[in-house]
Length: 342
Image 1 (cartoon, rainbow, N blue to C red):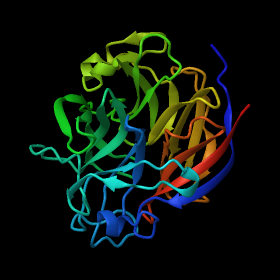
Image 2 (spheres, rainbow, N blue to C red):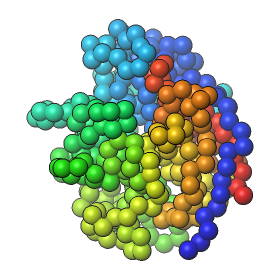
Image 3 (cartoon, rainbow, N blue to C red):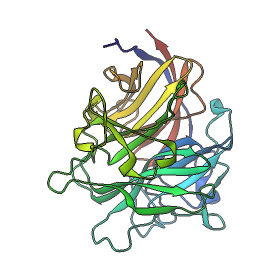
Image 4 (spheres, rainbow, N blue to C red):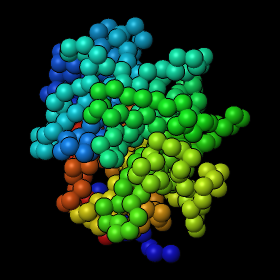
């Protein structure tokens, strides 16, 4: 077993607020949302970056934290960015709208599901001109960090993110008794160094923020077909998800994974909710072994932090940019970290 490369954070700074009316993006007056979270980022295949946000609130939101469903609530919204000067912040050019100046809910509730609190995107990827989003159908919110999902699913858009389709069959339904299906939350990734078969990788965790990290792969033309995925068992790939073994031990919250060309290794960023921090892990290969979580952002410096989604346009040097949420202001920030490989 190869020894995993250790990558550490050597410097951290907050670049700029991304969302909120007090951010450079003026998302209240421009897009009709005052508060949101997550900010999951992926290349759109056309030179830009898409950013998916979670529960979003507009007029009537007061905070702190998430607002009332009467405060122009949308379960999720989507924005596009074409800016490349991340040192100046993450500029949002436009959003998917349902009317002029109003960000649309792109993934609606299931019309026939009796118990569903919300629908939250967890990962995104563009393949062959199609946008794919992994999302979770949240059944109920429990103790902090301990919600229960109905299922994790794949939605897709063939028109640049303007309209989305939730296929009833493109779902990993959660286990009935314990709610431990390991792909309720996801993180898509591809290997830019691969010389043979191309794969789309999906890292996954069970519902909530305390599970281990598992790994699946699928051919690029089958991203929306859960029956086509293969799961890493610790020694080989299997068609049976129940045989999947963790590639990284939890507790792991919101995941983001990418190959960092500048450092020559894989990076994983996720929330360690129990320790109150966002951590960084690294590996030589996608299947691991992965290092233990190295401190990236401390909750002592940024209270009630969560998220941690890598910007795909900043993986060539010796640093990273990523989005981070805070519960109190209930908005998203762009962070920058200098890294060193030991």
